[in-house]
Length: 291
Image (cartoon, rainbow, N blue to C red; front, side):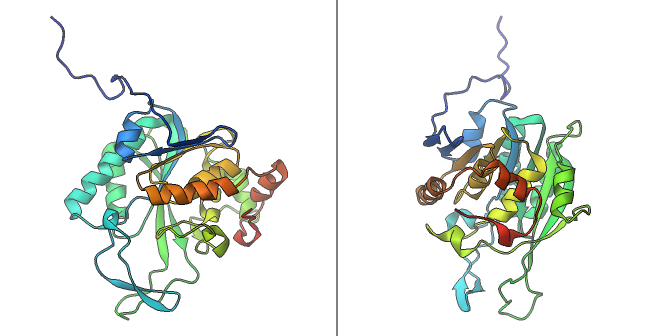
């Protein structure tokens, strides 16, 4: 009698994934859809590095200051909280899906504010990730706090974790030391928000600076590695990976953001070897070339 036990996720046959967009020359693929579903159709142990910028669930009808004007913090329905329990289950689901596709020695980086990062960290511990660092990304010119009842929100946290306790993760220590001026790089990174040049084709409400993603890619991957972003947004992770000669996979559910990402990818190019070496020798974001 055949067993009726349901096969595990890794044993289930995978439907053939068809990219929404693919550029073989640049090594970039973009998939449209829910990240948990797309990740579930990918082969296990096939990705070397993940950067994830999930919803922070901070769109609560409040206000903030942008370019000297009072604006709503509502970024879209995807950023509205469903309550702490539902938000945490969402984080566990996509993190579990990411963990399955990571190679044994791969790592994942996840950015967030206080609205979500504690849930992400707890979910990582529940799932057996090995927490490596919590990076404080300091923004030197943050928007002022209009209520004057809190300290100005000037940081975001980026958690760095290995797939599990057995992972022998990649850390390009010498590169990071050179970028830090010959000293060990600290876990406090001061980087400005995305520059005007990075928003030529449009704006994403939670766009990350290219300098941040380039540092992450240089720190924890090798040329030729596969870098994945399950919430690709405007495509910054894909651009950083492609420029630094990694293969890039993005997953995004929004047609508008995919359109923005493809425009940016179309204008970007891989860096020459001399330019890559320059990235590995300086942490000054002012020296980045956005062409």
